[in-house]
Amino acid sequence: MSGNSRGRFRALWFFPLAAFLLLFPFASARTQEPQQVERDSTFWIFQRKPLVTYTIGAYSAYVLYKEWKWWWRDNSYPWMIRSEGFLNNYSLGVDKVGHFYTSYLYTTSFRELMVWGGFEPETALWFSVGIAAFHAVSIEIGDGFSTYHFAPDDLLANFLGITYGYLQTGVPFLRNINPKWSYYPSGNAHFKKSWHITGDYDGHIYWLSFNIHDLLPRGARNYWPEFLSLAVGYGGKNISQGASGIPARKFAISLDYNLLAIPTPGDTWDMIKRVLNPFHFPAPGVKFINGEPAQFKPILLF
Picture 1 (cartoon, rainbow, N blue to C red):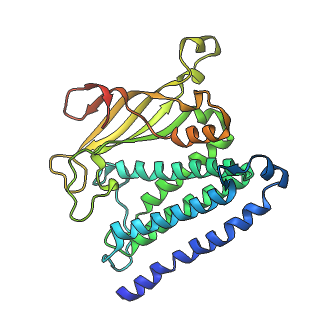
Picture 2 (tube, rainbow, N blue to C red):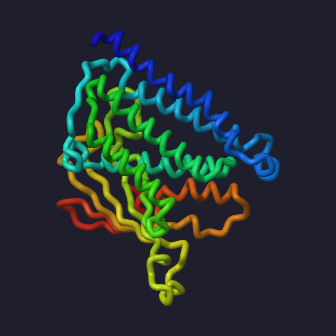
Picture 3 (tube, one colour):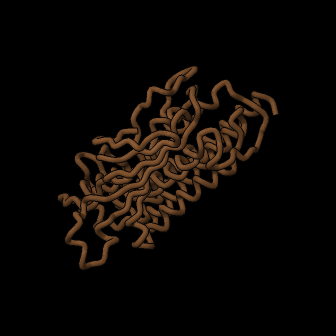
């Protein structure tokens, strides 16, 4: 396939997105009861549903543009499929955990935004699953026509993240175990072109946060604050783009904050804390790097 043909093929990805932008408002109009729109759909001077609809659409278009700019511009290559080794690849699997988390974040955050915007919860869930899947598939198709190649293990990680976000809506116990992410620039990445956060893997930590209060027996819950959780994290050292040194796995244990336990007035603040809860904010923790002594950090950043 020639470079021009591959360019035309990539341009076709934007047609599903354009169709989504055109059809999404009509779907929203059919799923909202009139009296509910009147009662709680106004947000400042905007109607919530159109605001959410076009915000998600604009964000999706922006993400596709950034992917093209970072990875695919001037990088056409014959279609190629290659497995990367999952947790034993160039980033020691940190990128795979990142794929899982990103799709999980899209699924849960888009759902929360859409419910806040007035969509029925089931409609919001299936739209959020579809949007997350669209992003996951489009990235791999783009990579397949570049030197990055189509990676089945990337796609698997994406769909595992989508599945976990979906299961949390129906299995209350799983809401006590939440994927989170933290990032702080490591200074260990060297970019040939423009800086992008996905290349600075040394600064990433991906967490599983446990809501200890709700996991304890009922009689013991008064001894543990509801807003305080414990998280275990995974990352790497010397795995960033252009980094030197021997790659090593990084593990961490840290306090974490359950933002959902903080009382807030109104559904707007409730939506905000639900969207922010998948992020791990700085807290005391211990970091373990293969071959190095454990390090306690009053504020663990990366």
